[in-house]
Each structure stands twice: as C-alpha cells, then as structure tokens.
Amino acid sequence: MGLGAADRPQELSEDSRGERERADVGLLAALDAAPPGGRAAAELAARVGRSRARVFSRLDVHTSAGHAVRLRRGRWTGRAER
Image (cartoon, rainbow, N blue to C red; front, side):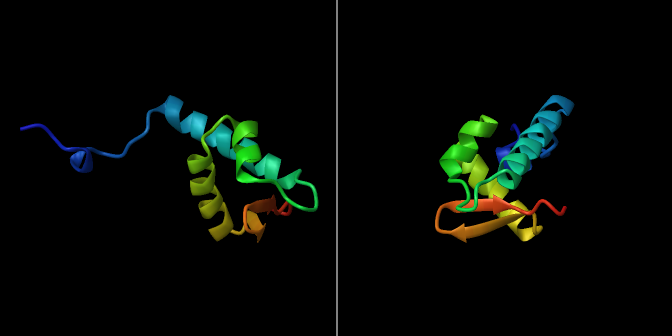
C-alpha cells in the first residue's frame, strides 16, 4: 500500500521554499505600501501572483505575528516597523 497524503512528509523543495519566501516578501511590501484605506485581498493576490486563498492564509499568519493589520472587512495594511 502507498502512503496517503496525510502520511507524506510536508517538506518543501528548495525552489518551493524560495518561491514562498519571495511571495511573502512581496506581500509584506505591498501591505507596507498600502494607502491609508488598506488593500483588498484580490489586489494583494494580483500584486504577488498568488491566489486569494493563499493570500488570506498568509494574512492570517502575518496578522498573528503582528506584521499585518486588518483595518476592516476585506482591507489590510502592514506594519513597516518589523
């Protein structure tokens, strides 16, 4: 029997890891450069070349880490003082 998806290691290749890091750097830069009203997830997704779902996932991570701020529903900004 083969391994199911849940049984496989969750390791990323160097290329995938580097690509994710570049996308995160781009996302944080777009958040930091946001106008006072913030940016929508769709706009952020277009700027970093990722899906909205992926951007929302990373926004959750960055909000928890204090790197992003949700201004109101659907609008986000960054914290330049990282």
